Amino acid sequence: MIYKRSSELFAAAQKVIPGGVNSPVRAFKAVGGDPIFVKKAEGAYLFDEDGNKLIDYINSWGPLILGHAHKPVVDAVVEKAQSGTSFGTPTEIETKIAELAVKMVPNIDKIRFVNSGTEATMSAVRLARGFTGKEKIIKFAGCYHGHSDSFLIQAGSGAVTFGTPNSPGVTQGTAKDTLLANYNDLENVKEVIEANRDEIACLIIEPVPGNMGCIPPKDGFLEGLRDLCDANDILLIFDEVMSGFRLAPGGVQERLGVKADILCFGKVIGGGLPVGAFAARNEIMDYLAPVGPVYQAGTLSGNPLAMAAGLAMLNELDQNREIFQSIDKKTEYLHEGIEKVLKNNKVPHTINRVGSMISVHFGKEPVTDFDSAARSANLGVFNKFFHGMLENGIYIAPSAYETWFISEALSYEDLDKTIETVAKVTKEF
Ligand SMILES: *Cc1c(COP(=O)(O)O)cnc(C)c1O
Image (cartoon, rainbow, N blue to C red; front, side):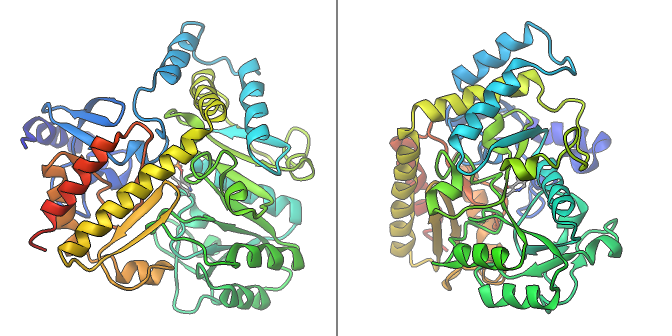
């Protein structure tokens, strides 16, 4: 394939935008080469600036669960825009989408809308701290909660000790309030809680992580966290920015039957526009300004175009609930197909999947937490795989640590083509 114009555009972008991108992973730095500049997209396909057509397994990193330019979403945005793009006043559509979200998601009474997943998790943690009067938080190694300071903390050697920041600019003062634990390891979580008794406001987790590949929670792990939180007056925050409105209409709470205290959303809830949200029961949400003392605000929060896209998306998912089974089945089909061809080609691999979240790891050992994900990342093999797929018109995330973002727009023909391509690309591995 030819990527001449994309490369030219990338060169121009790098002169005026750091690294040529507005979010680092888009730059292909981990896999090498120049990123693809996209001109337009429709359904399951991207069309780049050089005229290449690609089957898309990124879907804007998750939001576009129904594929690109989904008509009801596009129509809703276009129609809204005719009446003005932002007012800074309350609008009826904000209540409409809030009512629908509260109906779809178990265990929440109120929801507040923000502009990104990062804002949602950042605000949720502030709310948890305000509500409990405690300062420390627990996060899990390898879980991503956006780029606010408290979450950019790496796994240290001892999880019971304070985390060290993994980005310059995050202060030690902030880092010391973020405690790290290992995913799928209840004993470790117990130790962290024991060592910091009465200081922990909340435990935040991707209940089904998608940012170190997809990692299924072990039986009893989430239930165990729920019990530990209850026993220690710790609020349990499910960051469902990726899993929300994807794994079930009510997210992981519905799919796996475990309740959280605060929920964070993003991605699908905005239908491809910049939207995040956090939600909880009344007692907690009424701690927020202007009712309660915890401050949180946003000039463009609840923006009419964003709410129109989000409402159209949630309506589609709510009224056509068979979508969730259909997309799970497509992902299962892909899973079985890829598994088979990798076995045939004798390529060491582990495929993890929960519903429509799936990740392919080029290592043999089970991937159950950040350490095993890192050991299985096998960057040399992944890079060859990524570029081989791209060369054949299949666009997967340019990172060994990402899930594939499946959309309902993918046809079984697309899936077959993908599986055949995996077979072809990995033949000489
Ligand atoms: C994408 C993501 C975020 C961050 O959302 P942004 O909209 O990129 O700020 C937070 N948490 C999880 C689990 C995510 O996948």
